Structures are given as structure tokens and as C-alpha cells.
Image (tube, rainbow, N blue to C red):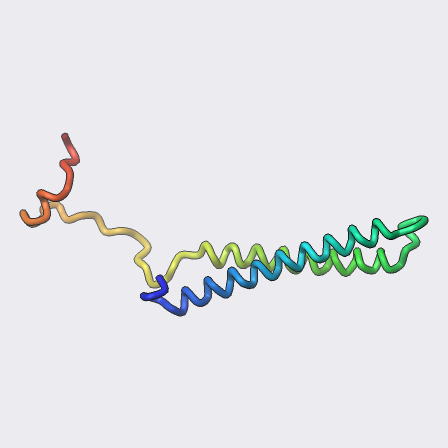
Length: 106
């Protein structure tokens, strides 16, 4: 694909890089929450830093999940430059090609 459509290859590469960055961001959020929970003393419901971090992480997590879902749809979208269906073989092939195909009705 890179030789025929360098623009599509570049888009796919960028999509992979963006997905990796978003997954990394999600892991960092999870690590931050776990760290704050481990360091919390007393009632965690009164820890404003933890509550604010959880609220921010929920917002960021939702945004990242939406972007990942969009990226997955984009990645699976068909290539518009390719035909949507394959053409069947012609009913009669030239003799030079007919000997190289297996007999469909053995």
C-alpha cells in the first residue's frame, strides 16, 4: 500500500502513533490514581487531591476512549481507491491461462 498510496500509509502510521500515545496516557492516569490511593491516609472521600484527580481522569479517560474508538473505525474503513467488489473471472479464458487454473469441477 505504501508504494501505491503513500498518503494512506502515512495516515495509518500516524493512527498507530496516536493510538500508542493514547494508551500510554490511559496507563499514566491509572498509575496516578493508584499512587494517590496508596498514599492516602484517613478517609479517601475527604482527600480533595484524589477527588480532583479522579474527576480529571474520568474526563480524560472518556475523551481517550472516544478517540480510540474513532481511530479503530477509521483504521477499518475500506480503502476508497480499491474496488468495492471483485470482478469474477470471465466465462472463457484464453487457452494460455486456462491450463494454469485448477478445474473447478473435478
